[in-house]
Length: 335
Ligand code: ATP
Ligand code: LTN
Image 1 (spheres, protein in one colour):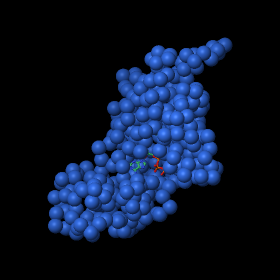
Image 2: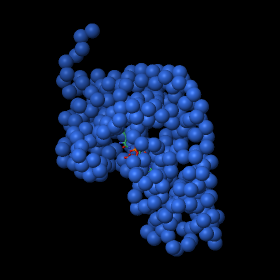
Image 3: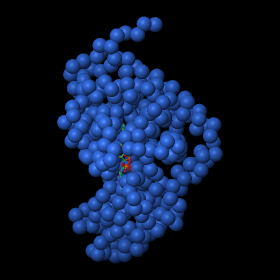
Image 4: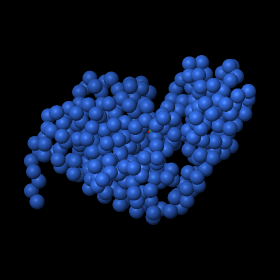
Protein backbone atom coordinates (compact mmCIF):
# COMPACT_ATOMS: atom_id res chain seq x y z
CA UNK A 1 0.00 0.00 0.00
CA UNK A 2 1.08 3.57 -0.63
CA UNK A 3 -1.14 5.82 1.47
CA UNK A 4 -4.56 4.22 1.27
CA UNK A 5 -4.08 2.83 -2.23
CA UNK A 6 -2.98 -0.54 -3.49
CA UNK A 7 -0.04 -0.52 -5.90
CA UNK A 8 -0.07 -1.32 -9.63
CA UNK A 9 3.01 -1.98 -11.75
CA UNK A 10 3.30 -2.62 -15.47
CA UNK A 11 5.71 -2.02 -18.30
CA UNK A 12 6.33 -2.36 -22.01
CA UNK A 13 9.45 -2.85 -24.03
CA UNK A 14 10.67 -0.09 -26.30
CA UNK A 15 11.12 -2.45 -29.23
CA UNK A 16 9.16 -1.87 -32.44
CA UNK A 17 6.07 0.26 -32.86
CA UNK A 18 3.14 -0.47 -30.60
CA UNK A 19 0.17 -2.29 -32.10
CA UNK A 20 -3.52 -2.22 -31.22
CA UNK A 21 -2.75 -5.55 -29.46
CA UNK A 22 -0.52 -3.71 -26.98
CA UNK A 23 -3.14 -1.00 -26.65
CA UNK A 24 -6.26 -3.12 -26.23
CA UNK A 25 -4.52 -5.86 -24.22
CA UNK A 26 -2.54 -3.65 -21.89
CA UNK A 27 -2.40 0.13 -22.24
CA UNK A 28 -6.17 0.74 -22.24
CA UNK A 29 -6.51 -1.30 -19.02
CA UNK A 30 -3.73 0.72 -17.46
CA UNK A 31 -5.77 3.86 -18.07
CA UNK A 32 -8.91 2.22 -16.70
CA UNK A 33 -7.20 1.21 -13.45
CA UNK A 34 -5.13 4.33 -12.94
CA UNK A 35 -7.52 6.15 -10.56
CA UNK A 36 -8.01 3.19 -8.29
CA UNK A 37 -4.32 2.34 -7.71
CA UNK A 38 -1.01 4.02 -7.00
CA UNK A 39 0.56 3.26 -10.38
CA UNK A 40 4.06 2.73 -11.72
CA UNK A 41 4.32 2.46 -15.50
CA UNK A 42 7.78 1.79 -16.75
CA UNK A 43 9.39 1.88 -20.18
CA UNK A 44 11.42 -1.29 -19.67
CA UNK A 45 14.42 -0.35 -21.77
CA UNK A 46 16.71 -2.74 -19.87
CA UNK A 47 14.58 -5.63 -21.10
CA UNK A 48 14.94 -4.39 -24.68
CA UNK A 49 18.67 -5.06 -24.91
CA UNK A 50 18.15 -8.80 -24.51
CA UNK A 51 17.94 -8.61 -28.30
CA UNK A 52 20.42 -6.45 -30.21
CA UNK A 53 19.28 -2.83 -30.62
CA UNK A 54 20.55 0.17 -32.49
CA UNK A 55 21.39 2.63 -29.65
CA UNK A 56 19.99 5.79 -31.27
CA UNK A 57 16.85 3.97 -32.29
CA UNK A 58 16.31 2.47 -28.84
CA UNK A 59 16.66 5.91 -27.25
CA UNK A 60 14.17 7.46 -29.63
CA UNK A 61 11.69 4.60 -29.31
CA UNK A 62 11.89 4.67 -25.53
CA UNK A 63 11.04 8.36 -25.53
CA UNK A 64 8.15 7.83 -27.94
CA UNK A 65 6.82 5.03 -25.77
CA UNK A 66 6.96 7.16 -22.67
CA UNK A 67 5.06 9.92 -24.51
CA UNK A 68 2.57 7.36 -25.73
CA UNK A 69 1.73 6.35 -22.16
CA UNK A 70 0.77 9.99 -21.56
CA UNK A 71 -1.04 10.31 -24.90
CA UNK A 72 -3.11 7.23 -24.06
CA UNK A 73 -4.48 9.06 -21.03
CA UNK A 74 -2.11 8.39 -18.13
CA UNK A 75 -1.55 11.55 -16.12
CA UNK A 76 2.16 11.75 -15.19
CA UNK A 77 1.31 13.90 -12.15
CA UNK A 78 -0.67 11.02 -10.68
CA UNK A 79 1.08 8.01 -12.21
CA UNK A 80 4.78 7.34 -12.03
CA UNK A 81 5.86 7.08 -15.69
CA UNK A 82 9.59 6.47 -15.98
CA UNK A 83 12.48 4.64 -17.66
CA UNK A 84 13.54 1.40 -16.00
CA UNK A 85 17.22 2.22 -16.70
CA UNK A 86 16.97 5.41 -14.60
CA UNK A 87 16.25 3.45 -11.42
CA UNK A 88 19.21 1.40 -10.26
CA UNK A 89 17.15 -0.81 -7.95
CA UNK A 90 15.78 -2.89 -10.83
CA UNK A 91 19.18 -4.38 -11.66
CA UNK A 92 20.19 -4.66 -8.01
CA UNK A 93 17.09 -6.56 -6.98
CA UNK A 94 17.24 -8.69 -10.13
CA UNK A 95 20.69 -9.91 -9.11
CA UNK A 96 19.43 -10.98 -5.69
CA UNK A 97 16.35 -12.68 -7.15
CA UNK A 98 18.53 -14.51 -9.68
CA UNK A 99 19.93 -16.35 -6.68
CA UNK A 100 16.41 -17.48 -5.76
CA UNK A 101 15.35 -18.68 -9.22
CA UNK A 102 16.13 -22.07 -10.73
CA UNK A 103 17.55 -22.79 -14.18
CA UNK A 104 14.76 -25.33 -14.69
CA UNK A 105 12.06 -22.69 -14.11
CA UNK A 106 13.63 -20.31 -16.60
CA UNK A 107 14.10 -23.01 -19.23
CA UNK A 108 10.34 -23.59 -19.27
CA UNK A 109 9.45 -20.00 -20.22
CA UNK A 110 7.79 -19.95 -23.62
CA UNK A 111 8.90 -16.38 -24.41
CA UNK A 112 12.52 -17.51 -23.92
CA UNK A 113 11.98 -20.47 -26.23
CA UNK A 114 10.33 -18.25 -28.86
CA UNK A 115 12.93 -15.50 -28.70
CA UNK A 116 15.88 -17.89 -28.66
CA UNK A 117 14.61 -19.60 -31.78
CA UNK A 118 14.11 -16.18 -33.45
CA UNK A 119 17.57 -14.97 -32.40
CA UNK A 120 19.56 -18.19 -32.58
CA UNK A 121 22.80 -16.27 -33.10
CA UNK A 122 22.41 -14.37 -29.82
CA UNK A 123 21.00 -16.55 -27.04
CA UNK A 124 22.51 -14.46 -24.28
CA UNK A 125 22.21 -14.90 -20.51
CA UNK A 126 20.04 -11.77 -20.30
CA UNK A 127 17.44 -13.35 -22.56
CA UNK A 128 17.40 -16.33 -20.22
CA UNK A 129 17.11 -14.32 -16.99
CA UNK A 130 14.70 -11.76 -18.51
CA UNK A 131 11.79 -12.99 -16.33
CA UNK A 132 13.83 -12.40 -13.16
CA UNK A 133 14.31 -8.76 -14.13
CA UNK A 134 10.56 -8.60 -14.71
CA UNK A 135 9.95 -10.10 -11.25
CA UNK A 136 12.30 -7.47 -9.78
CA UNK A 137 10.35 -4.68 -11.56
CA UNK A 138 7.14 -5.81 -9.95
CA UNK A 139 8.37 -6.79 -6.48
CA UNK A 140 10.45 -3.63 -6.08
CA UNK A 141 7.26 -1.57 -5.74
CA UNK A 142 5.36 -4.15 -3.69
CA UNK A 143 2.79 -4.25 -6.50
CA UNK A 144 -0.60 -5.79 -5.72
CA UNK A 145 -1.72 -5.95 -9.33
CA UNK A 146 -0.05 -6.23 -12.74
CA UNK A 147 -2.20 -5.59 -15.84
CA UNK A 148 -0.82 -7.53 -18.83
CA UNK A 149 -1.96 -9.49 -21.87
CA UNK A 150 -2.38 -13.28 -21.60
CA UNK A 151 1.08 -13.96 -23.07
CA UNK A 152 2.69 -12.63 -19.87
CA UNK A 153 0.82 -14.94 -17.47
CA UNK A 154 3.67 -17.43 -17.24
CA UNK A 155 6.09 -14.67 -16.20
CA UNK A 156 3.61 -13.46 -13.61
CA UNK A 157 3.31 -16.92 -12.14
CA UNK A 158 7.08 -17.17 -11.88
CA UNK A 159 7.14 -13.77 -10.14
CA UNK A 160 4.62 -15.05 -7.60
CA UNK A 161 6.69 -18.20 -7.03
CA UNK A 162 9.87 -16.20 -6.46
CA UNK A 163 8.09 -13.86 -4.04
CA UNK A 164 6.59 -16.74 -2.07
CA UNK A 165 9.92 -18.58 -1.98
CA UNK A 166 11.69 -15.49 -0.66
CA UNK A 167 8.95 -14.78 1.89
CA UNK A 168 9.07 -18.38 3.13
CA UNK A 169 12.76 -17.92 3.99
CA UNK A 170 12.87 -14.32 5.23
CA UNK A 171 9.35 -13.48 6.41
CA UNK A 172 6.83 -11.19 4.72
CA UNK A 173 9.11 -9.13 2.52
CA UNK A 174 7.25 -9.02 -0.79
CA UNK A 175 3.62 -8.48 -1.69
CA UNK A 176 2.58 -11.42 -3.89
CA UNK A 177 1.12 -9.76 -7.02
CA UNK A 178 -2.06 -10.71 -8.88
CA UNK A 179 -2.29 -10.52 -12.66
CA UNK A 180 -5.03 -8.39 -14.20
CA UNK A 181 -6.21 -9.60 -17.58
CA UNK A 182 -8.92 -7.53 -19.28
CA UNK A 183 -12.16 -9.22 -20.38
CA UNK A 184 -11.83 -8.10 -23.98
CA UNK A 185 -8.69 -7.67 -26.04
CA UNK A 186 -6.39 -9.81 -23.86
CA UNK A 187 -5.12 -11.57 -26.96
CA UNK A 188 -5.50 -9.76 -30.27
CA UNK A 189 -4.43 -11.97 -33.16
CA UNK A 190 -2.53 -11.19 -36.36
CA UNK A 191 -4.77 -9.91 -39.18
CA UNK A 192 -2.89 -12.13 -41.63
CA UNK A 193 -2.69 -15.31 -39.54
CA UNK A 194 -5.31 -15.42 -36.79
CA UNK A 195 -3.59 -18.38 -35.13
CA UNK A 196 -0.67 -16.08 -34.15
CA UNK A 197 -0.80 -13.16 -31.72
CA UNK A 198 -0.50 -9.68 -33.22
CA UNK A 199 3.05 -8.66 -32.49
CA UNK A 200 5.07 -5.50 -32.98
CA UNK A 201 7.95 -7.58 -34.30
CA UNK A 202 5.96 -9.30 -37.10
CA UNK A 203 7.76 -8.83 -40.45
CA UNK A 204 4.50 -8.58 -42.38
CA UNK A 205 3.25 -4.98 -41.93
CA UNK A 206 -0.30 -6.02 -42.88
CA UNK A 207 -0.47 -8.40 -39.92
CA UNK A 208 -0.46 -5.62 -37.32
CA UNK A 209 -2.22 -2.29 -36.96
CA UNK A 210 0.16 0.23 -35.41
CA UNK A 211 -1.06 2.93 -33.07
CA UNK A 212 0.39 5.61 -35.34
CA UNK A 213 -1.05 4.21 -38.59
CA UNK A 214 -3.06 6.82 -40.51
CA UNK A 215 -6.78 6.19 -41.17
CA UNK A 216 -6.27 5.03 -44.79
CA UNK A 217 -3.65 2.49 -43.74
CA UNK A 218 -5.88 1.20 -40.94
CA UNK A 219 -8.86 0.79 -43.29
CA UNK A 220 -6.69 -0.97 -45.88
CA UNK A 221 -5.28 -3.42 -43.34
CA UNK A 222 -8.76 -4.37 -42.12
CA UNK A 223 -10.02 -4.80 -45.69
CA UNK A 224 -7.17 -7.24 -46.28
CA UNK A 225 -7.69 -9.12 -43.00
CA UNK A 226 -7.88 -12.89 -43.42
CA UNK A 227 -11.38 -14.29 -42.76
CA UNK A 228 -13.09 -17.51 -43.93
CA UNK A 229 -15.70 -18.80 -46.34
CA UNK A 230 -18.51 -19.26 -43.78
CA UNK A 231 -19.94 -15.81 -44.46
CA UNK A 232 -21.57 -15.19 -41.06
CA UNK A 233 -20.37 -12.74 -38.38
CA UNK A 234 -20.23 -15.15 -35.46
CA UNK A 235 -17.86 -15.58 -32.51
CA UNK A 236 -16.86 -19.16 -33.34
CA UNK A 237 -13.26 -19.52 -32.24
CA UNK A 238 -12.75 -22.97 -33.68
CA UNK A 239 -13.98 -22.40 -37.22
CA UNK A 240 -13.86 -18.62 -37.65
CA UNK A 241 -10.78 -17.41 -35.82
CA UNK A 242 -10.27 -14.40 -38.11
CA UNK A 243 -13.83 -13.14 -37.69
CA UNK A 244 -13.62 -13.87 -33.98
CA UNK A 245 -10.56 -11.64 -33.72
CA UNK A 246 -12.33 -8.83 -35.61
CA UNK A 247 -15.32 -9.15 -33.26
CA UNK A 248 -12.98 -8.88 -30.26
CA UNK A 249 -11.34 -5.77 -31.71
CA UNK A 250 -14.71 -4.18 -32.48
CA UNK A 251 -15.99 -5.04 -29.02
CA UNK A 252 -12.90 -3.59 -27.34
CA UNK A 253 -13.15 -0.37 -29.38
CA UNK A 254 -16.89 0.22 -29.08
CA UNK A 255 -17.68 -1.38 -25.72
CA UNK A 256 -20.41 -3.47 -27.44
CA UNK A 257 -21.01 -7.06 -26.32
CA UNK A 258 -20.31 -9.97 -28.67
CA UNK A 259 -24.06 -10.74 -28.90
CA UNK A 260 -24.91 -7.15 -29.85
CA UNK A 261 -22.23 -7.25 -32.56
CA UNK A 262 -23.54 -10.54 -33.97
CA UNK A 263 -27.03 -9.02 -34.09
CA UNK A 264 -25.80 -5.78 -35.73
CA UNK A 265 -24.23 -7.74 -38.59
CA UNK A 266 -26.87 -10.41 -39.07
CA UNK A 267 -27.44 -10.88 -42.78
CA UNK A 268 -24.60 -8.51 -43.69
CA UNK A 269 -21.40 -9.41 -45.53
CA UNK A 270 -17.82 -9.40 -44.31
CA UNK A 271 -17.06 -6.27 -46.38
CA UNK A 272 -19.48 -4.13 -44.32
CA UNK A 273 -18.23 -5.65 -41.10
CA UNK A 274 -14.56 -5.04 -41.87
CA UNK A 275 -15.30 -1.40 -42.74
CA UNK A 276 -17.07 -0.89 -39.41
CA UNK A 277 -14.24 -2.53 -37.47
CA UNK A 278 -11.69 -0.34 -39.26
CA UNK A 279 -13.73 2.80 -38.52
CA UNK A 280 -14.03 1.90 -34.86
CA UNK A 281 -10.25 1.54 -34.60
CA UNK A 282 -9.66 4.84 -36.43
CA UNK A 283 -11.99 6.60 -33.95
CA UNK A 284 -10.44 4.91 -30.94
CA UNK A 285 -6.93 5.96 -32.00
CA UNK A 286 -7.75 9.50 -33.10
CA UNK A 287 -7.46 11.23 -29.67
CA UNK A 288 -4.28 9.33 -28.89
CA UNK A 289 -2.68 10.32 -32.19
CA UNK A 290 -3.66 13.97 -31.71
CA UNK A 291 -2.27 14.06 -28.18
CA UNK A 292 0.92 12.40 -29.37
CA UNK A 293 1.45 15.11 -32.01
CA UNK A 294 1.04 17.77 -29.27
CA UNK A 295 3.47 16.07 -26.92
CA UNK A 296 6.13 15.77 -29.58
CA UNK A 297 6.23 19.59 -29.71
CA UNK A 298 6.63 19.85 -25.96
CA UNK A 299 10.13 18.64 -25.22
CA UNK A 300 10.55 20.47 -21.89
CA UNK A 301 7.39 18.98 -20.49
CA UNK A 302 8.45 15.42 -21.33
CA UNK A 303 11.91 16.12 -19.87
CA UNK A 304 10.37 17.24 -16.59
CA UNK A 305 8.18 14.13 -16.44
CA UNK A 306 11.26 11.96 -16.99
CA UNK A 307 13.23 13.67 -14.25
CA UNK A 308 10.52 13.95 -11.59
CA UNK A 309 9.17 10.46 -11.99
CA UNK A 310 12.59 8.80 -11.96
CA UNK A 311 13.16 10.42 -8.58
CA UNK A 312 9.80 9.23 -7.30
CA UNK A 313 10.43 5.66 -8.52
CA UNK A 314 13.92 5.66 -7.03
CA UNK A 315 12.49 6.73 -3.66
CA UNK A 316 9.86 3.97 -3.48
CA UNK A 317 12.08 1.26 -4.92
CA UNK A 318 14.84 2.01 -2.42
CA UNK A 319 12.55 1.18 0.48
CA UNK A 320 12.11 -2.40 -0.75
CA UNK A 321 15.71 -2.76 -1.88
CA UNK A 322 17.18 -1.75 1.49
CA UNK A 323 14.86 -4.16 3.27
CA UNK A 324 15.83 -7.04 0.96
CA UNK A 325 19.55 -6.29 1.24
CA UNK A 326 19.27 -6.40 5.02
CA UNK A 327 17.30 -9.66 4.97
CA UNK A 328 19.83 -11.50 2.83
CA UNK A 329 22.68 -10.34 5.07
CA UNK A 330 24.43 -7.50 3.27
CA UNK A 331 26.26 -5.23 5.72
CA UNK A 332 24.50 -2.07 6.94
CA UNK A 333 25.52 1.22 5.32
CA UNK A 334 27.46 3.56 7.57
CA UNK A 335 26.09 7.14 7.36
P1 ATP B 1 7.19 -8.49 -29.30
O1 ATP B 1 6.27 -9.05 -30.31
O2 ATP B 1 8.21 -7.56 -29.86
O3 ATP B 1 7.75 -9.51 -28.37
P2 ATP B 1 4.85 -7.58 -28.02
O4 ATP B 1 4.03 -6.95 -29.09
O5 ATP B 1 4.45 -8.88 -27.49
O6 ATP B 1 6.37 -7.54 -28.40
P3 ATP B 1 5.41 -6.47 -25.39
O7 ATP B 1 6.23 -5.24 -25.15
O8 ATP B 1 6.08 -7.75 -25.11
O9 ATP B 1 4.85 -6.49 -26.86
O10 ATP B 1 4.07 -6.37 -24.59
C1 ATP B 1 3.54 -5.24 -23.96
C2 ATP B 1 2.17 -5.57 -23.38
O11 ATP B 1 1.23 -5.79 -24.43
C3 ATP B 1 2.15 -6.84 -22.52
O12 ATP B 1 1.32 -6.64 -21.40
C4 ATP B 1 1.57 -7.87 -23.44
O13 ATP B 1 0.91 -8.88 -22.73
C5 ATP B 1 0.58 -7.04 -24.24
N1 ATP B 1 0.35 -7.61 -25.58
C6 ATP B 1 1.28 -7.80 -26.55
N2 ATP B 1 0.72 -8.32 -27.66
C7 ATP B 1 -0.60 -8.45 -27.41
C8 ATP B 1 -1.73 -8.92 -28.16
N3 ATP B 1 -1.58 -9.36 -29.41
N4 ATP B 1 -2.93 -8.92 -27.59
C9 ATP B 1 -3.10 -8.46 -26.33
N5 ATP B 1 -2.09 -8.00 -25.54
C10 ATP B 1 -0.86 -7.98 -26.07
N1 LTN C 1 7.87 -8.94 -20.14
C1 LTN C 1 6.92 -7.96 -20.56
C2 LTN C 1 7.36 -6.56 -20.33
C3 LTN C 1 7.61 -6.32 -18.89
C4 LTN C 1 6.61 -6.21 -17.86
C5 LTN C 1 7.36 -6.00 -16.65
C6 LTN C 1 5.24 -6.30 -17.84
C7 LTN C 1 8.82 -6.18 -18.30
N2 LTN C 1 8.66 -5.98 -16.96
C8 LTN C 1 6.71 -5.88 -15.44
C9 LTN C 1 4.60 -6.16 -16.61
C10 LTN C 1 5.33 -5.97 -15.43
C11 LTN C 1 6.67 -8.20 -22.04
O1 LTN C 1 7.48 -8.75 -22.72
N3 LTN C 1 5.55 -7.79 -22.48
